[in-house]
Image: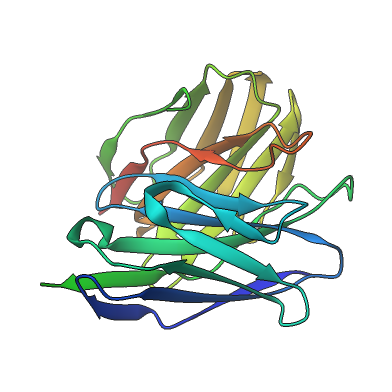
Length: 116
Length: 114
């Protein structure tokens, strides 16, 4: 069984400060991991993904995340927050490879607020 | 942007009436999903499809049915709408092959059951 835990339903940072959004997962098979962003009244947009290869992945808008197998984590970071980063962020996991499972599991989301 | 549309975008309906939401894609992706989004719950999977006429239940499937008669269309039906089904519904698609396992989401349908 797979699960995703996002620590902190609300995170506030000052403009220009480091953004750190936490995601921990559990998976019985090698996972594929994703971060999505959702702006108000819109659908989810892919920020970045980890499937195989390099464990530090870079995404759009200056975000990056590092897959740490030993810690079962996939935390999202951005060195300097911008007002336009204010949104809700979702971590998601799906089994990698040809496991025969088609489902994705999403975390409950973290709403990021950026303070001027 | 991935070619996904949802219709209608907004709907208000009365308790007990059937409702059908449509998801249409132009990407020819094999996998299609219906989720509902509610505050504090993130996205919860209702049903998904892994090919034409091939569907399966997700974690919150009670009261919902789906059909997929063509690759491009995935319909979600609320058999008899209840107030607990007031939510925002998202369709998603995925090629789920090679290294492309990400999902692409539609703009959502806001459904209110009165």
